[in-house]
Length: 284
Image (tube, rainbow, N blue to C red; front, side, top):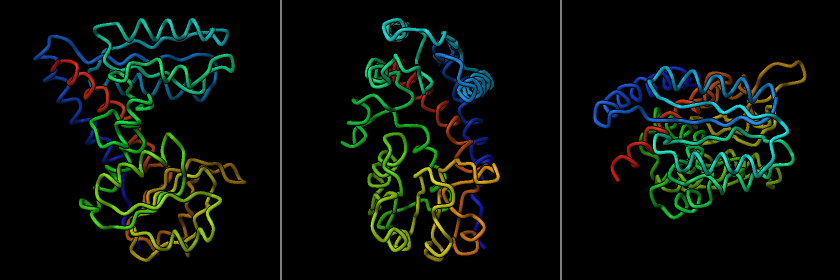
């Protein structure tokens, strides 16, 4: 039976470390790190995510503001706010909650955020730095995946890692991070030929394709580490991942549950990214 990788416990440890470092930052600089979040429109899920982020930031002692804008906000108005936050001396991290209304181009918003304050790690300059091996703010979920992998495999040198998914938010950056950690990386996706065989070759399997229970138990190499990024609803409405957990758990060496695996790590990494951005800005 696989070892369960407890994302809740690991995220709690990360938050505790961030809280201690925030206190030291405040003693040194006379201010708390600042995370400003921008929410445009009335998407119910986005409101929940933003409330959770706001609560988590306050719990570790961070400052900041949630800017709630109406769904009618124009792209020009949103970009003006982003520019204002870019120039604000006490704002270290800027996060625009996506999706945004259709009249706003997400790509333009991402490009507008100062890379030094881009705690989502999506600005093209941060993406380029990540793939070039330069210091960068890295997307939160991939950073969380790497922290979970490190819990059971501190050194992935030479391991074969298969990432199923090619999104800019998870698949591509987690592949880059694994490559930087000296793993041998294969990027697969839902259209990969013989996907089952590709998955079976993995010492580390990261599932981030967005299809409920796509990865079956017999697709998993015995003893492999399985990181399930998926967050789906099955035909009964039950929350499930991209991996068929019930059949994968007896085969894998270690596996993340859904919920309680990758999910809690994302906000913990957002807090750590904000602190990192603040420390870098303060050092300059």
